[in-house]
Image 1 (cartoon, rainbow, N blue to C red):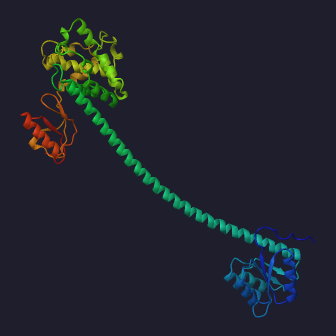
Image 2 (image 1 turned 90 degrees about the vertical axis):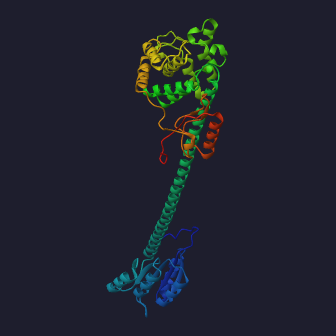
Length: 442
């Protein structure tokens, strides 16, 4: 008969066994058998004593005899199952009483039953397997409980993470909107600064007040007709506002002389003003598109222009548009020829120069605009006395001398309205104030 190995000697406490039998010799035999294998063995000579021990001790496995006075094994194990369900239960019987075994199985839910006399190796093997199974069950329960806790923690973490993500996303949206708003404000302030600088340039020479603004508005309308993208339209609009910046060093006499009367050094100096304009803007990265447009504003579609002799589509589209828009108003203001042409006369000259001086596609877009005679910015003209806080300007507000007071889209408040009224009172003249249509303002 081969010997059964003792339980492993590790850091865990040895299993505790409770043996219950009314025969002392049986108890002694069980104690010798299990203690020799390292188990902790408790003994009870009745079911009542066994229950008392269980109330005091943590027991892993109970071995109970079936036939005992007062309380048989089936009743005893049934109480053990009810009160200590995690304790393993084995039945020891010396009788072939099937009914008693069935009662023990049904009432006590025993793990196994063992007949007397037993085989020591079989007994030890059965106990070891029972305890290993119990350990596995306990590990399973522990792991399941751990999984439930971790799942609950993970769920809570995910919920918290989702809340944090939502909160952070909301913060980022607010920051993004603030950044967009700030960027829009910077762009608006930038364009307003350009407009003010353009108005300052017009304080010299014979340019009519608001000339650059008229050129810029017409150039923008043509660009939109030709479906240029937003950045190209912006670059062109700024270039148009600053198209005379290269003339900043011209003498007053030269500025007052029509182009057809310029000769010699003056004509050579005039032809260089686009290059000077581009040089003035090149240090600003955001204005390099406008600088390229200004450099090519005197190029001709047939290649006879200045300074680079570009031909056709080699000329930047913005420069092709600017050349036409500037000439249209220069013809009417006497800057190109000695007399001031009417608008229809200027239009005829431009149309006749299509394919020579001007791009035919640009001329076609220009004709659509002047033929439909579009009105100014949508809105309604108001007297200063009719202004109310919250009203928005539909166009730039200029003095009669062309000095810009406020930019389009400015929202009026009570203080600004009073300043406009004071300005009119001191200047003895009415301002042309156009207000954007808006709900609440008739």
